[in-house]
Length: 463
Image 1 (cartoon, rainbow, N blue to C red):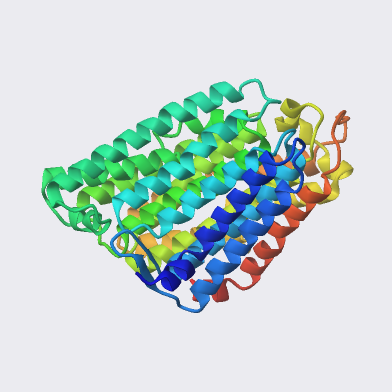
Image 2: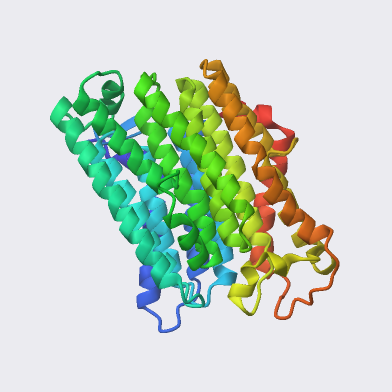
């Protein structure tokens, strides 16, 4: 075994592991741990830069043959998701009463996420999935300011366990069919007409549907998003969804879709788009509204799998970056409040532009992008998704998805109407301006979003 290749190929993972160890030592060695946020930020930033370096230098290697390999596209995907974690860490610094335990849990979850992106076997993929998921159940429960956090964590745990069991059953069926635990077995199963192969691949896909909150496996999302702290909600909405989609992308690779899988990847995501947008209209709570919004966006992301291999990866990666940046921007810009429950209410942001113009403008940009209004990155992402669907010959699915996406414009514009067009009749008692770390988090999202909007061609060329 070439230990130099192992060290370099797993450099992002090794840096995250080093960060976890430093955080644990820091927590054990002091009654009042300080510097945890700095250790976490440095570790994740270093891991993101290392992944970007591996991607741009074209480094490819089979680090552990049959189990773990790295390539330029996977390394760039790691760099993107790790960079999206930086605003979350900044929000943790300001928002949580006791953010100390959050940092090692969040880095552990990120470790599992990046592990899935390089998985070559179902063993590694399953290990990464569980490492990504288990810390999040605890992170949801740590929101002590919200009485429903324990209930939300329990619901998430039960349904997450159902996803785990479904995936294991699917892996068992594929192993029984192909006598192989390589993720390439999934692609061969797609081309097979054997009932065992088709059932196994469908069960694995449904497990990732549950992790990404695709209808009808979405019921955990609104409660978990509402019960968690703001940084954890942002992490689940942007990063957990990215992990589930990227792991699915790893499974599909360049494989063509058989007819049964086309129906599964079109009907359920389409239902997710329509139901997510319709249900969001009725919400008076910002986090529940964003939960249903994320359910709709999960539908768009899985719609991209109807396209061909190379275009599929490009469309998914661009959409994940655009969606992640704007979702995190919306959460980072919401003003803190003495009463955490009041912070979530849409009535609380009435007249926000008159009180905190920067917060209102950044939230407004995030809403417009998530709605798909040009020239913001959300529009470009949707364009790429539906272009891929139409290029693959599924024109009617593309038309139905577009019609479903128009439903979302209403509730996004309602948020803008509350902030800019409502009179300042509500005195936001307990509302305070965003703290410095949250402001920096919003800037870390806003600047790349502007770059993506102005230079989409260059971003696509990198992907």
